[in-house]
Image 1 (cartoon, one colour):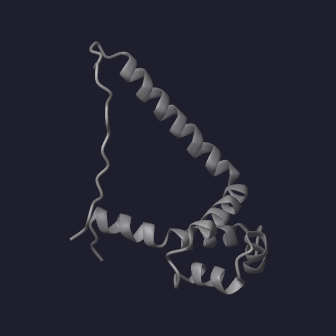
Image 2 (cartoon, rainbow, N blue to C red; image 1 turned 180 degrees about the vertical axis):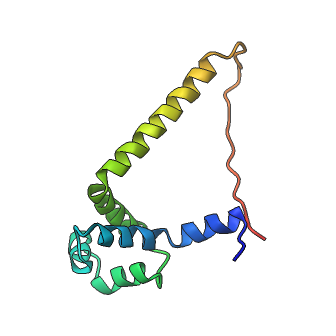
Image 3 (spheres, helix red, strand yellow; image 1 turned 135 degrees about the horizontal axis):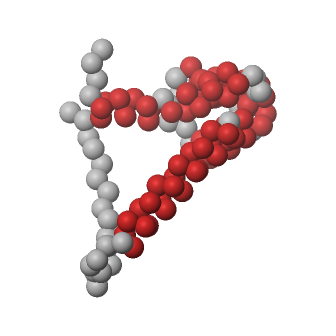
Length: 116
């Protein structure tokens, strides 16, 4: 199957909750029932996330599952945090070293890709 980068990104976004729930289960620290109890989300809903039947969780459900994942994979989140801080530090240092200073504030824009 040949997918464009954009299509791969959309697929990852769509199944993000499934990957997170499965990773928690693979860690062996929680069962399906344990995830349901900890997050206060019905076990059937957790099963739908894990199986990929529900790929659009409520924000509150996603937050609870992400918090659990962060506790299960603390080392992973520490590495991600360190990389983000290093990138931010590098970005700040490169801006400080610029010779020109703009008198107007910089505005960044975000574009949303749409795959064809």
